[in-house]
Length: 128
Image 1 (tube, rainbow, N blue to C red):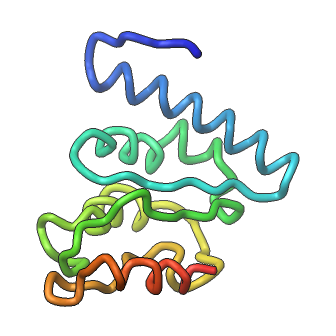
Image 2 (image 1 turned 90 degrees about the vertical axis):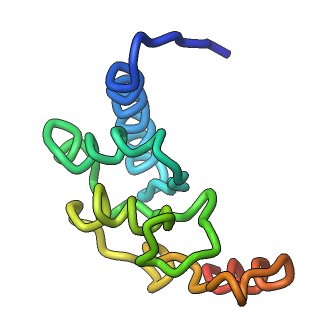
């Protein structure tokens, strides 16, 4: 394993973008698709913005990408705290991606009142 230390979030994000572009292209060539799980919070915001602009936008075969969620807050998708809302604004609304399934680029539709440990497995089963 290699550990990298970067002076700022921009340097880290560019390095991560180059790494993910390489992985995406390798996966697309060998398997015909690339799957990625998007994380939330403020850390990936710059990275997602890079993917939505050149040169990174044109380096990934977006129709071959399957997008999933590594985490999502139990809030409505338009809530200011929603990881989906951030990803949609910064990335998903700007890339030429066609979801394979309706749930691939949409959040789990749990509201705080519906969010429970028992609802999560059922919601994720909808992705398969």
